[in-house]
Length: 359
Image (tube, rainbow, N blue to C red):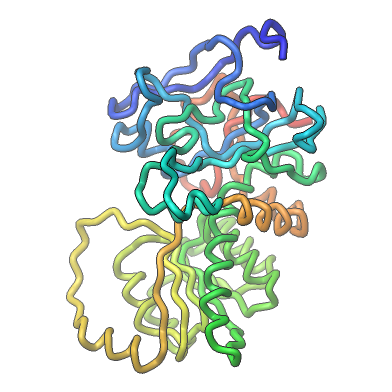
């Protein structure tokens, strides 16, 4: 590649651990490593980005002060070797996590989402520059091709990969019993992760229920238009539902506890939301233990995704209604107004920072 073709790249960077250190700066050439060169179209903003900007999370690459953020991406290939299977104009999403250098048994098997020693790195989060730059490089093994008809909606692929992994593991666990035949799923939380979890549940032919504190607005409409049932208010009112599967996306302790206690027999609960801590609940662990054992219940945690899950997510999004997906993105912010993307506003579901206006 002739680096002179890509002399500079505007990028959004922070000093990890330093609050309010974000700035838009000009870097020399594309960020990252790899033989694929792509132009970033947009990045999605999520809670992890807010934590990094607040100074409570994130690690810069070794021997440098600043980190290029952005881990939810969509980019257009400008240059790629024939061996990569990609050509100029293809849309790609970069996989976030990279295996550790040891590597552990899971990373060696391509399942870096299950890293056993914690020495993995992550683009835009941990020791690797992210995708919030006009020009990026990506290694072929970590570039996932996106259906061209999705366009900028491909920015939803990374969060979709997280729920694709959750569903993959739910189904693997359910397969422990040949008689397993789930009918009902309860998703708690109607943010991007919850809505995408509901989408994948509906694609599996399940009766989908979504609980969230929002009583009106885009969230209830999205769930109902998906063909699901939307619930708000007190989650205890749903105890009679007894879902076969729960995908918990809030991390809110009271909701987590209710999800654990009121599944169907042989119920499976996937905890996909991270709790902030500081919320104490009174819990009779003996009663919970008895219920889980006697009813063959399973509770497990799930985070991140490997390439197979990105590919599952790409297939799920390609099969989804484009208009419905587009409504998940409630705000699009131009790069020049990047600060607006990090303002929490009523009605926000998914906020996207656009590096290039969608045509």
